[in-house]
Length: 331
Image (tube, rainbow, N blue to C red; front, side, top):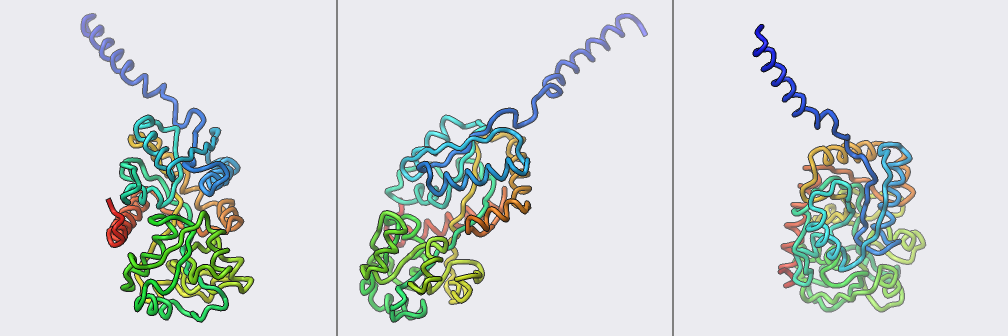
């Protein structure tokens, strides 16, 4: 082999080495602390959910890096996501947890949020809470169809208490089955309270006829015999205090509305980071430590990741959009 040929070969090898060097020297993800944002107040449901989620991720050593939880309240999460989509477009080290509130804020007229799940990276749904419809223990109503038939005849006859404003979760999770049953949702007398505890107090105090809430908030009252739960919006009957409560599906009302909690990543999250988190969250969902934690928190596991989570979001987005239109509250 001539000297010129040898020189050319060395030049080619050197060039290949230089091209490959960054890949060989690249630090695997994650290489620093990860921040998880709760787009709500400190101590709220999102903040607490992230704290026990990161605690189990650390205790099981599924994630070795430090994980920080940061609360960012404002506009029901709208303030955070508007900043996040612009400033953290490619930030693999900042994730956030939210609920169907993100979809609602984008779809309703007063939501004032141009961004939704389509503008970020859905990673995983972890657990759900189920909407319930309840009445006082002394109420004449013992089943949902009798209640709904009376409301269908005169939607203004009965008042419904909820722990959120019009167009928010408690409101919509009642209006959806009512709408599917043929009740005009615009005529229903809905009274909004600042939180589920106040709505329950209104029901028990005789200031409302019906309560729309979630299973986690009414279980103790049901056990104590203070209320009757006429239906639960779950895919199947639940155990414990809810074992005798029929699902909406059992009653022939197709109005599924899962109140999920899920984690999302940046709009342009890298493929490496996305795979890392979907794998990590899948391991978490299968771990005994996670199952025990959910039991401690009185939450129902419903794990979906990647494309499966995205499909859930697509389906719910269509449902919420149709419902808000029927209420005259859509953009």
